[in-house]
Image 1 (cartoon, rainbow, N blue to C red):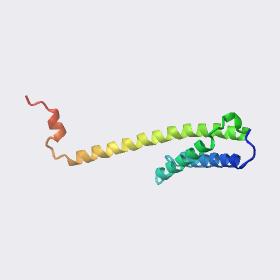
Image 2 (cartoon, one colour; image 1 turned 90 degrees about the vertical axis):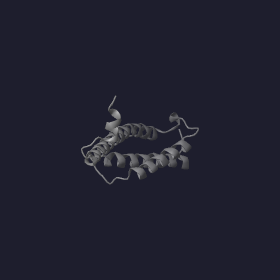
Image 3 (tube, one colour; image 1 turned 120 degrees about the vertical axis):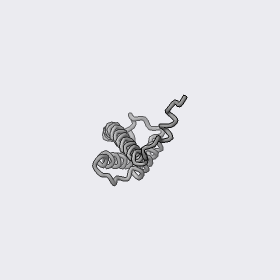
Image 4 (cartoon, rainbow, N blue to C red; image 1 turned 45 degrees about the vertical axis):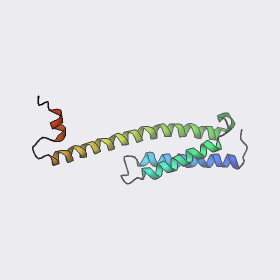
Length: 123
């Protein structure tokens, strides 16, 4: 197991930061329309990069039980985050499609649109 060194403390720190970022994002999705996804992604990416650097040459069996438990918890939270982000993106796409349809309909003046005209076989 990794001794109580600065690397051990850095690993605990980055795992805790990542957990906090994921918890905040999971809590905000669907609840806070002003949530800054861009900033959250920057923070997640930074934590994942830091993990990559810190875990070079370390296998999961080198971690203590607390760190292994935290890694398992993080995996579950990341899986949940993946599902929430996908659902959010699908909802955003759906709303964007509705807005596009409403805008297109409001621009129609009763004549054929270019798309409708191209779709009609005049021969």
